[in-house]
Image (cartoon, rainbow, N blue to C red; front, side, top):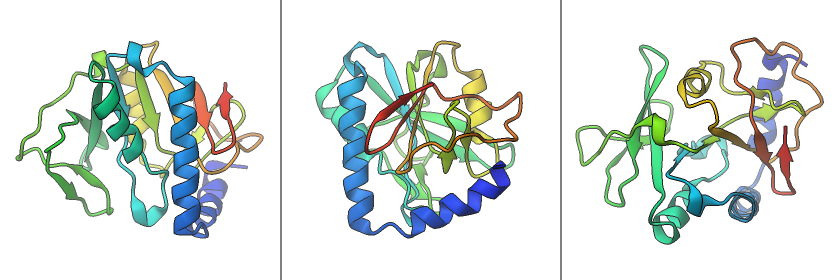
Length: 193
């Protein structure tokens, strides 16, 4: 299937999830994340902030666990720049102010207690997605924010998708500029590509 075919299917699948299914699935993903990756050896983990109305995997438990248990590891969160389809990256601070953007996404408010982060320090990126395939190709919302960002990360950065659903067999129209995932975590298992 193509990205355009998969996008509405997986948006709809996520919308049918109950709040309990989102919470339980997210916690299962978080448990697998910390049992699989050696966060204590990482300098920085980049983590998206979930769009709750889209039933995205809740990444706040990842952020809070790193903040509380892995003090040597920095958490980095993104802010969208819609005019250029780029992301800015900020160090997560416990008292930082988050603002809701026009897409319903919480993001750092650059005017209030924020500190820009260096992407060169990032060891792992938790990547949002609608779907992925068994080769590590992903389907996002179609604006290319994460493909641009991941292409600018250091070559050995770990790219980890999180999804409530298992990978599909193949995304038929993956492009050369699409950046493949290294892993995808579902509530059932960690997929390695």
